[in-house]
Image (cartoon, one colour):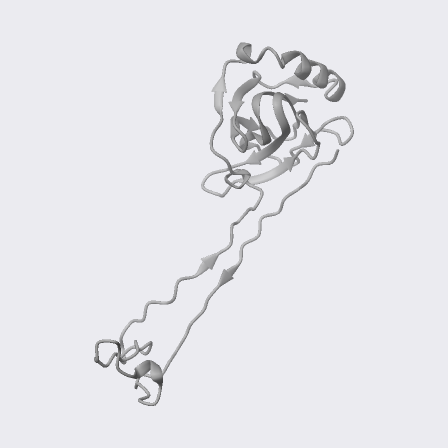
Length: 208
C-alpha cells in the first residue's frame, strides 16, 4: 500500500469575441425573422468611453482530491457501541498496522449508503506522524483521506489509502505513518467514504 499525494491545480481561461457593429444585409442571420421583423445582431463593441463587462471566466477545481471532491452526501454518525460488530476487526487491523502508535481521540463510526462520507475533525500537529485505520461491515470498498484545511484556503488532500476492500489503512506498516514536516500545525479532518456498498464503518486516528 502506498500514500498518494494530490497536488491542486488551477486553470484560468479568458475568451473574448468581437464582431462588426454594422449588420451585413447579405448575412442570412440578419434577414427578417419568423414575424417579418428585422433583428439586428447584438453588437460587442461599446461606445467610446463606455465600460464593457468582460466575458465570464471558468476556473478549474483547485483540488480534484479534496473532499468536496471526495464527494457524496454525509453518512449518519452513530455511537461507537452501535458499531461493536466491527470493533474486533478494527482492533485486529490496528494491532498489525500501527504498532507503537497511540490513539488520537476516540474512534468514530457511521451508517453509510454507497457514496456517502463521514468526516472527523482534528488538529494536525507540527512534526507528528499519523495513521488511520478503518473497518466496515457490508461495504465492499472503504476509502480514507487525510485533509488539511486552513481557512480561508481551500482544503488540500495530504494523503489517502490505496488499499482494496472493506478495510482501509492510511499510513500502515508498509509505507509508514504520514508525517507533518511543517513547523506548524493546523486544522485537518479525516474523511471516510463508502465508495462501493452500504453498511457500518468505524475508524480510528493514531499518532506518534
